[in-house]
Image (cartoon, rainbow, N blue to C red; front, side, top):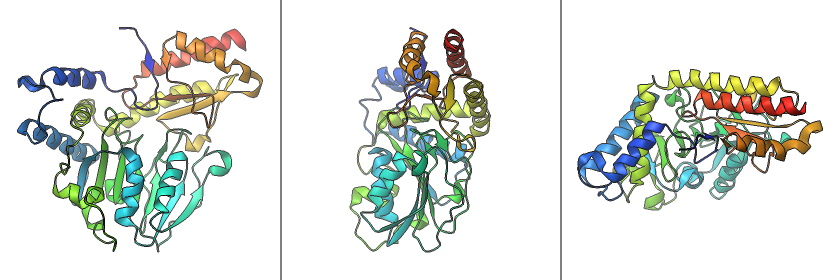
Amino acid sequence: MKKVHNFNAGPSILPRVAIENTANAILDLNGIGMSILEISHRSKDFQAIIDEAVALFKEQLGIPEGYHVLFLGGGASMQFCMVPYNLMEKKAAYLETGVWAKKAIKEAKLFGEVLIVGSSADKNFSYIPKGWEIPKDVDYMHITTNNTIYGSEIRYDMDSPVPLVADMSSDIFSRPVDVSKYALIYGGAQKNLGPAGATFVIVREDILGKVSRVIPSMLDYRTHIKEGSMFNTPPCLPIYTIMETLRWLKSIGGVKVMEEMNKKKAAVLYDAIDSSKIFVGTVEKDSRSLMNVCFVMKPDYQNLEEEFMNFAKSKGMIGIKGHRSVGGFRASIYNAMPIESVQALVDCMKEFEASKA
C-alpha cells in the first residue's frame, strides 16, 4: 500500500490496529460466522461490544458515579439541539470560539435566551477569549474545547457555578479530563475515536428532567439512558471501532501518556512554523491547539501556496489544505497520528522553503 501521511480533519486517521481489527470483524466477528455488519444489535455478541466500549470510556476518563455514557446518531450537530432541548428552561451562556460554537448558539436560541459571554470573532477566532465570567443565573454554560477549523483549544477544566457543557468532538481522549467538572460532554466520533456515524454523550443524570417542555422520546437523554443506547438501532460498526480504538489507547498507557505524545508532536510542528522564513501560524501562541495546527504563507510568499500544496501532495501529505474561512494549511494531528508523519511534514516544509527562501 502506498505510504501517505493522513492529516485530514475528520473523518481522520485511526490506529492501524483498530482499522485491521474492524476489517476482520466485518469479515467474521470473533469467529461466529457472521459480520459485525449483519448481527443483531440485540444479540449477546453486540451487547458485549457496547458494554466494553462504555466500560473503557469510564475507565480511561475516570468517569465518576452518576454519569452515563451514550452512543447516539446525528453527530455533534444533533447535540446542538438536544442540549438546550433537555437543559434550557429560560437562559444559557455560550462561549463563541468558532463555527461550531456559532452553530450551537444558533440552535440554542430556538429554546430561550442565549448570552454570549465571550467571543473571538473579532480576529477570525484566532484566540480563546479571556476575562469572561460565567453567569450564575443561567441554566448551563456551553464551551467548545477544540476548534477544528481555526486551530485553537481550551486545554483545562474550568470551574463553573452552573452545569458545564462541552463539545469535545475533536480533542476527547487527547488529555486527562476531570469529568466531575462537567454536567455533559458530547462529540462526534470521527476525530479521535472511530469512523463517522456515532456520537458519544457523557451526561450526569441529575441534571435531567428539570425543564417544563415536553421532549420527544428520541431527543430525550433519559430515553437513551433507560434503553442503554438501544432505543433505536445504534451505529454498530462505529461503536465496534470505538471499542478497538480505546483498547489501543489503554494499551499505550492511557490519556496521560497520550497527552505527552500529543505535546511532543505539536511542538515539532509549531517549532518548525515559528522558525520558518515563509510559514506563519494563524493562532495566538497561548491558544494553540494540539490537535489542529493551522498556518499560512507569510505575505511575501502567499503566491507559493498552491505550489507548496502540490509539492506536499507529491511527498504523500494528504489533507493539509486549510478550511476556506482561514485559508493556507491545516495539519490535523490527532491521537493516532505518529510523530514520524509530523516529522515528514516538517521535512517537506523545510525542503520546500530551502528551494524558495
